[in-house]
Image (tube, rainbow, N blue to C red; front, top):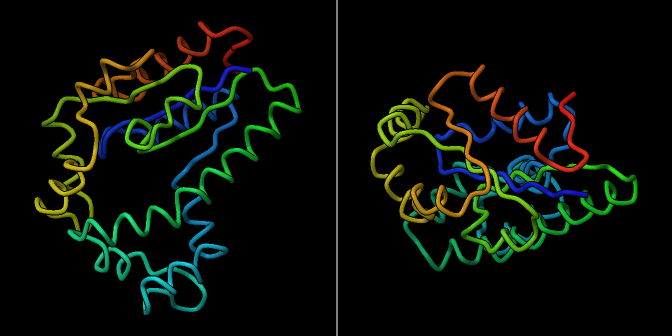
Length: 197
C-alpha cells in the first residue's frame, strides 16, 4: 500500500485537492475533519481542563479557543500536546483499516506534515502550492482573517519554497480546477497500483 501525504500552507488549496483525490477513488484521512470530530468528542473535556470556558454544550468553541492560544506559544504547545496524539491515533486506525483491506493507495491530508515530522509516516509527499500573492488574496478574503492572524499562521509553517523542495509531487492550484485535477490524476497514475477512478 502506498501512503501519500498531502500538505500545503494556508490558502494553497489543500482541502480542494484532497477532494480531487477522493473523487478519483483514493481514500482520504483529513486531519482537520478528525479535529472537528475530536472537538465534539474525546478532546473536548481535555481541552476544557486546560482552557476553562472554551467548551459549550460539549463542543469546543473554536473562536474562544483561538483567543486562548493565539500569540501564546506555551498555550499553543499545550493544545498541540492534547490534540496531535488523538489525531495521530485516528489516522493510524485509518491506515490499518485500509492496509487490512488491501487498498492500493491512500492519502493522509496533514496540514502541518513537515512541522510535525509527518513525512516519516508516508511514502510520497504531495505539496499544494500557489504564488504568494494568490495565497495572500485567498486567505485575506476569509471571514475574520486579518493580516496579523495571517502572518502569525505563516510564521508557524515551513515556508512554501522549502515544502516544494521536499515534495515528490507538486499540485499548482493557481492554474484552475481542471489543471489541478489533471495533476492529481497524473500523480495517481504514477503510483504502483494507482489507477484514477
